[in-house]
Length: 446
Image 1 (spheres, helix red, strand yellow):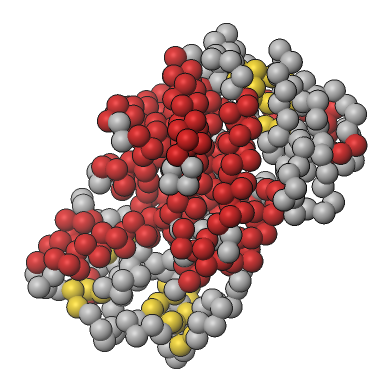
Image 2 (cartoon, rainbow, N blue to C red):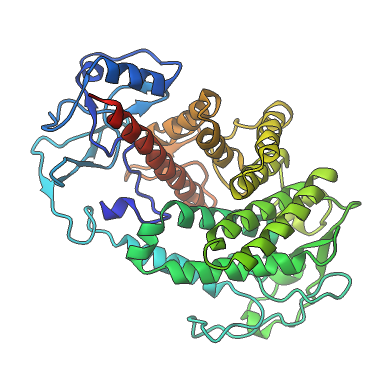
């Protein structure tokens, strides 16, 4: 099903797209289980799974380590026929009474996800600062902010402007870059089908090059360009800016573990993207990520306590960001110390900063992405249960998540879709992970 394969989408695909269903699970509502995969294995051994024809009355929902019913936006039988599921008032999904099949012309729901993905990358191209390349596709954009520099005068051209501003804010930019790379790594076939791989690579290299430029000394990293007040009082094209644009550095005496760690995660993820395309470039990104990881962990602190103009994106914590960075460094290098660090900093984030208390995945809360990574790396119920808790809140509208009358899940009236789309990304990545586990289980069946 192509709609379920295209990178960053709002489509919440099923965790059981393999169409394995359990009559036993449907006949009674089981109590919460300590380990979902142990339970699935037991079912397989007792031969309570069956294949086509799938009775629409029996379908699988994985909900906080309980098997209750099927959960997803589409149901696909083994003949490739798609059915639209309807959402019930209690947040569950069921097959419509008429079981109307949907033909997959472009996408099963009639929406063009390839176009949405392509326009998303155009947004990041429109945000580019500095001298634009000959491949620039945004006709109204030109070179801008060519005098941007670090406090010591090192040129800092390039990067992305933030939203409708002309500030360059590395904290949200690095978080965004890591998620964009993550989507490409998880769904390469979708990118290929949408014709967006080359544009994704170009944009990821653009922002990675800027982060490398920001690292202009061993213990100096330019984390922000621009004065908030001056920028917000100037309404015009970035090509025509005349206001002062100071640069702000992170140093041992002005630490910023959160911003540095998010940059590490982005560079490590992008290094993985490029490792089979340009090994030398990939190694360069890893080298900077290693140095910045040492910087972030040796001098702990929040960047918004060090950069006076960082109040537009103030940071609440930094241990979640270090755990996220360590997880990506482990994926890039395979070095056990990074996995050990990821688990240790994740636990510190829980103990010292209340990690997991905010049911939203956003630039100021890297916790949920880390749970997915650690679950994938270790298979531990400690992390899988946290991912289940997050998705359960988003799928059922459990506080603080709410649903609009038209069906949009949201947690904040400010920048609403950033939260929803990030939750959708986790849902899709997690569904793919669960599906891979179920596929393994299928092979164990007699």
